[in-house]
Image (cartoon, rainbow, N blue to C red; front, top):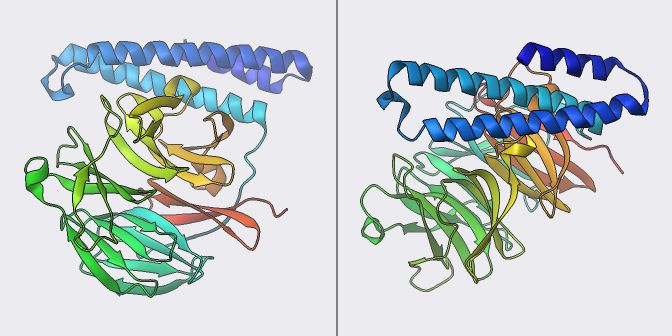
Length: 356
């Protein structure tokens, strides 16, 4: 089946005219339906951890996963041909000092620099906008998972290994540490991701097994900052969250979707799901929408979650493999840039949109 679908795709890509485009659109719909069907079968079979499944069933699940990945790759190849190239060009690769893997990236306009956390380093790394190393700020971090720039130029760091949030001034010097009390929600739970919301921060916590995440709010400007329960998306396994227009935008692995959650009403809506060809893992706001990455792929979404462009990160960066473990988007001198963190290559790639 895979070979037959690949041959059909190749014939349509090589064919001229509107008829081939119509056929390509129909084939993409078919691929989308097949991917969704395979995911449903995987979900039905994989009700227990793989290691607990009987050998033949385990092998069948792996076979289905490989087939789904192959069909998803075909979907992206056809989608790229139908939509045209994503408006990004590679500028440079940098950050080879990342010892383990980059975990978050943010641009600090006041310092005109990129700030990067890395799972394997206790420092906060600082680079120029074009990737030249500037400094490694010693902060005693352990497994930092997020650096978030606040509106006033301060930086909030999610220091998972030390179970705290660390607030830095505009000069990147520590102002205060906010330890997360484990008694709030069970032992072993640590802050994993943070997002800016009106009136403070949204904090997502996980334990070592990434089970049953919980959400809290925290006002770092309060005289005695404390963590209070916050409404968050339920019945899902969140991966990454960002705040945008007072709402939480959350990527989740179960279900595989990009969610938008209103903490005030508790309402959650699905913006983007895997049948569209993307399993979201990382999301980053950008002018007019969102960048979303997963499994070596990158998509530009509008404010409603519709896919504007989708491409493989390896195609954009010119590398053999790049898994897009984190993202950072920023605008500098009127030009839009995207930084993609590559867990496999232990470095970062700077991409730029064409200048207006």
